[in-house]
Picture 1 (cartoon, chains in turn red, orange):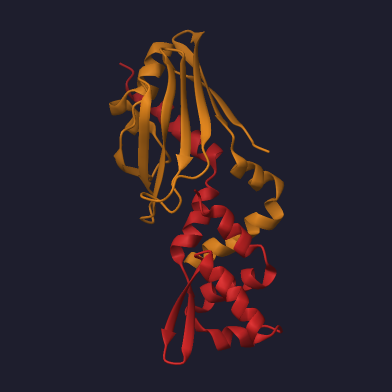
Picture 2 (cartoon, chains in turn cyan, purple):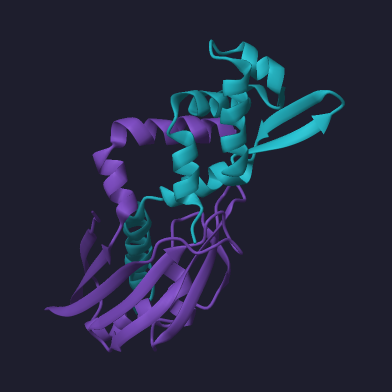
Length: 106
Length: 146
């Protein structure tokens, strides 16, 4: 079963989307610092981080008292694969097909 | 809601020659995919029914994988196969299955018309339909990938 629907569901909340954007811009960030970026409560941010973690969008690392979050590049790559433009793929392939046929002409 | 991409091209060879080029393994690697994509691993063979797969490596080193089953072959005029991306590249779970047909007809004067249709593309609908929302998200996400 594809994981894409779960990724989209997790990203469909504006706070969670912004958390992912911030993590991509800033790299690994402690949960407390993420919480400071937003005007909602720390427990609410914590819930959003759990959803992102369950969906496989972010990784969590514990360092002493801190919980550090970062984006999982593989998850984002899955989303970009999914948006592959098929028309562009086939157009390019047909261009090369035509070229190959011309090369084979005696 | 799904989308179909259809391309039609008049090619400079007979239907028989175009069919050979499109279906035979040694010829398929000459045209399969974008310029700059390499195909490090595959069993591309559209000349007979059966499973197929192709790994594609992009210039940035990212590997993608697509696989399916050749379902119908009627030389030199018709090929049908299924198509599904593997999430995250080789080894990933196979995503939604779509279907591709290729029709080849003689166009006279040693030319043939090839019509390729790719059916069931929810993705391209998403691109066209909710472009504003999701596409900008992908742009941001991809930019973030660095």
